Image (cartoon, rainbow, N blue to C red; front, side, top):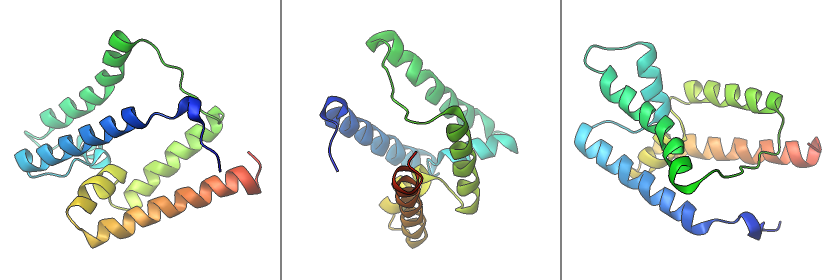
Length: 144
């Protein structure tokens, strides 16, 4: 295994992790809810009175953040080593996994682990294990 030093971004990654941790902590302290994106989005699909406003605000913020980055920092060139078919299938599999796992990586991996939830530990280990196996199969067994 080698590190691609030209695309290695430890400070940006650390900053993003800190911001995600702070946002998750503040959200649970202020609202008493987990900042799990799949649950927030799922709640919009079957809305409850007086519950949609904060959900829409979070989704709007997630959509606005890249636009703000573009406005202030300029365009970046993300590198995705996959075709559209792979990206679509992967997205559908992640969506199905969040339903089967009763949450997503932000809900279980960030919020659940910080609350020492055994269920979240098992879910996060399953997410990570499935990711490791998928990358191994795609890169080494299938040669993609």
